[in-house]
Length: 256
Image (tube, rainbow, N blue to C red):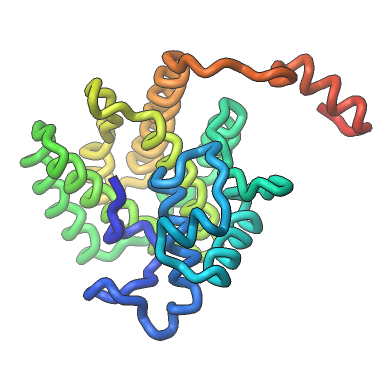
């Protein structure tokens, strides 16, 4: 479910929901990117300028700019005479994203210099999460995730901006994969089981504890994504096997 108030999304709107004056030029681009991250536009879907104009109420120029930005940032690729294909969720993509997170996330966030005030705020959020952890209604799940995002936002905001920008994009990829593979009707939803260990580690300023909690989160997301992908009935297309990929790479004169 799309949450326009998630702390991890870019700040392109004012509290009343209208674009801020300095953000109007990028509002359309950010809105379309958010739609991709939240799977309003599905992985592997091919969209055109006309589709984007109709679905999001954009002008043709804004739709073109938004799609071009998706392509520039690696979220979509142009398809001749068809439009833009949104980056599909594949096993290779899952592996790349989670490997990159393991290299960056635990160490970077463990060193986040949170203030006493910020740690106290995280403690209060932890109390709220404990009170609602067993609630499974749609609204409770959304609220739980919002508060979890707020904790992550505190950590992200305390590290250097270059690492934070890289890590935010990796989190966006992970969130998209998880949301795409969740099945609310069957009760297959990802829950942050490590969050209370993370809260305690943040409150105690325990760098090793924060790192362990982040590793636990990445491992849990990997298990969830792979478990859900193994239940998929989607067929592999021609040339999608590893052997075929290596042959194609060799034919193009590049390493596989």
